Length: 170
Image 1 (cartoon, rainbow, N blue to C red):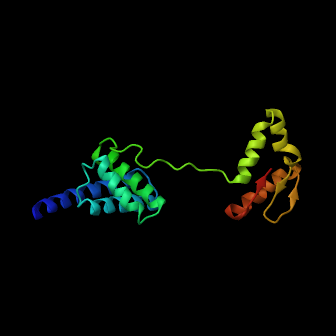
Image 2: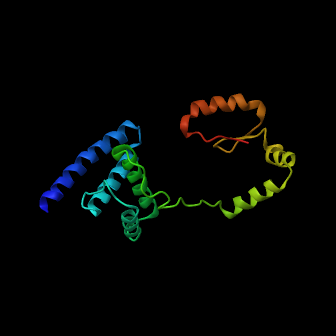
Image 3: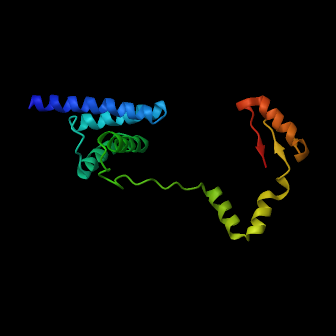
């Protein structure tokens, strides 16, 4: 039995290294690489390093157990990391589509009410209401108001301010 777990660990290590190479070659961000790698290590620990032939039931049990101790974002990262592993390392189709459904994001109440009001207006009225008299105004970080004639000056200021300047063209 010990020989089987040693073989499984060797296969896991080889595939983990291949996973690392794919993550880097695909140009993923370092934090994403770290999260996906952690996901594979966590799944490997959970299943005794035998993760190449997991079923939907196996994954359901794993993510169910994980949901009791980890946040939703950790679960999603583990799911995406495992899907990446299946696609790029194992070259297999994902065994559990729809296992963890995407969460529906809802707009805050004040935005939802504004959107509903704009959608209920005829198109030309909505466009006019959105543009209104605020169109030629610029607000700079320091709160000064500028009109459209000074747009080039504001752009020059933004260029010199770099990423620190906060400009909103309305």
